[in-house]
Image (cartoon, rainbow, N blue to C red; front, top):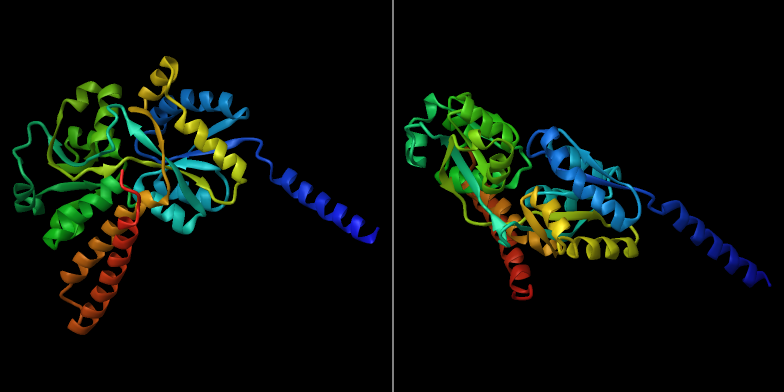
Length: 324
């Protein structure tokens, strides 16, 4: 009898814990790529669709910068979020997140591109010309956590040339994609980072100004953005979330709703999606070390050797992934 009472007590405790943890609403974090008003208009119809599928309120949560969404997940203020690959790395490493899906763009492409843009009437045609005139120019980088606004150009455009943005130009700022583009159009910036997805969204929200910018550099393809969910949520809920997102975009109505975001749907994904971004983060650090004239040769050699070891391990993980 004593054992039976103990077992019943344990079962009750487990049931009470599950009830306490039961999800009654979903707070969905959205990274700040453009103005909150534009993001709200684009995301609210999609979140309304998700409410019907989950059977509970789905509230979009906007922050002033990428770090705000990462911190919101860290402190369990949101259940899932849309990230870029760089911010997803930090969300996985620091905020208890895991990747469960990946967006598919409007053309079914596997990714998008980082850009450097200028005004249409700018005399600057190439990166070489941009750097040659840099000390007379104002340049705009993206959010520090942005993959296409900071990490990718930070490596391919700056680290590989052995220069830092803040040293290459008269003035360097940091802002959202949309803000960078509008500042270039207004003449407040001579050039700035941007990306192909943000350009397509700007064409919809402000076609006239979208027509006033020109790209002078385009990056290799960046993997489409991941969607993350908190690891500590019940397995049943996480499985349901993946099923709902991967199944979304099949009807004409859903296609129209998600087209506003310049996407056509979602595909399953995992943390393995972030391996190339992790490689890029380390490659950028390595390039910066190699160009650091203040460090002793022995310290530099040791630090580069450690980075090479980490890069080799990441490559092993990538090689072990199923081929698609």
